[in-house]
Each structure stands twice: as C-alpha cells, then as structure tokens.
Image (cartoon, rainbow, N blue to C red; front, side, top):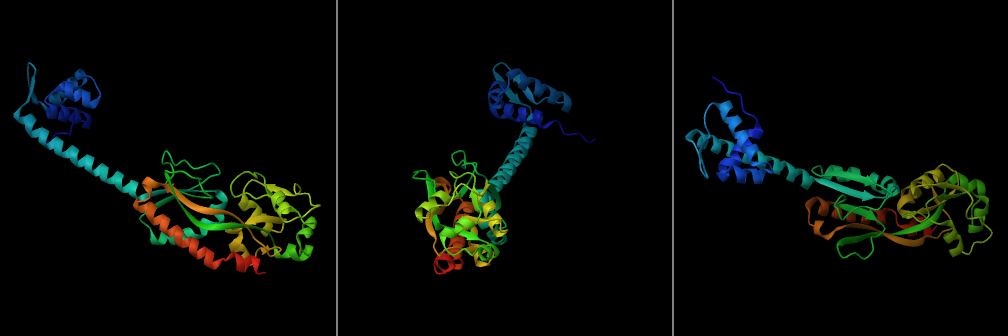
Length: 311
C-alpha cells in the first residue's frame, strides 16, 4: 500500500537526531528544546508504525529501519540544500544594482542600456535612480555612477569623462530673442534647478559672476527640482537652461538645443564607483568595462569643443 510522505519538519528533526545520535545535540543545532525534538521523532514513529531509535540510558541508537530511512533522508536534504545554494549563487552572480542620479539616468544612461541588455542577457540589471546618496557599505548598491565619492580607501572609482556647463535654449527661442551675448540673457526667462546644492545642479549666480555679467536678476525665472526637467523645459522653449554637457549633448547634436555664447565651462567629472572588494565580481566587472566603452563613445560622438566651443 502507498504511504503519504510525513512532514518535512519531522524528517529534519529525525535526521539531526540520527546524525548526532542525540536529541540534545540535535536540539542545539535546530535551536529548539530537547523535548521538541523527542516529541517530533515520537510523532514520526507513530505515523510510520515502526521505531526509528533504540533509546538506552545516555545512548541513542538507530534501528535497522531507522538506519535505512536516515540515509535516504540525509541524501534528500543534502540535494535540496545544494540545489537551493546553486539557485541562490546563480541569482547572486546575475543581479546587479546600479545607482545614479535621476537626471543622469533619463538623459544619459537610458539611451545606452539597450545595447547592454542585448550583449549581457545573463545579467539582471536593476537601476536605482535616486537623489539620495547610494548605500555602498551595506551593499544595497553594487555600482554607482556619480560625480565622485571623495577619497575613500574602500572605494574603487574610475573617471569616465569630464563634464561641462553651458547655457542652452531652443532654436526658436534663440531666434525670437536674438540671443547673441551673455547680456542678452536679460531678455530671457532663466530656468533653474530648485536644489542648487544637489549634485548635477547648476547655478546661474555663479555662471553670471564667472562671466562678468551684471544687471541680470539671477533669482528670476522658473525652478524645477531635477536637472532633466530644466533640459526639457529648454527644449520646449520655456527659457534658457544652464545645462550639463552629459545631459544636453545629444539634444545639442540633434539641433533640439542651441549652445549659447560659444564657451563651455569645465566642471566635475563623472565617475563609476564600487567597493574594491566587489570589483572582481563578474557582473560588476562587465558593467565597469561597458561603461568605460560607452564613455569613450560619448566623448567621440559628442565632443564638447566641436559642439560648443567651436561655434
């Protein structure tokens, strides 16, 4: 006659007791009481209708049936454990958490990711676009793309490219306002990042001061809380944005934005960073190398001097 399998938990308790030849040691391994192990084994014996152990003072011996069952259960549990370990390892080795600022994600990284997915279908990339600083210490993020993390001995960081800042506006706005010199900005609406201390933000006050432009209210205009929003507002003709090259280069190349006044001001660099202990992890190394390649292509295709300074 067929026999339904007993509960897995009862088999686990039995296997531990048989392996240690002790209810007490099995209880310590399973983090339960000695009586809990004893009761589970008794319930299992009642269900199977045969004894698994000969209980003697200070000694626990397997019966013939118990010995036979022990080897089968132990083998099955080992196979289950090894299978779960393989699955966990495969998931661990394929998952990649990448952090970057939302503006950089939408205007620089997203247009490139299709190529990464096509060439690296074995890597499950999860993009974390967030204004908050990434958490590397708890390994919530594997790789970060940012404007540097300072001098931290535990971090590996590689300069992808230098970034630049310059004013941009739609072709229609440039023509309608006749924007020829920085002084002409007095005729335009200035577009601001409303969080000037945040990374990727820009400052009209600093830019106007550095270029010796006076008589313009640098606080006037429209404010947005992300850099990509001021870029889109500029494309829509709402005003003049102080854009980062990394965020506006593609739109400049396609003619959706016009760089003004023929000069780009060098700013921070864009880095790819991770914990040094993670750099040899296959998916991290693959993404690092891919980002380096993308950065080289970006600099070649959107050379700031050809797009801006030579105009």
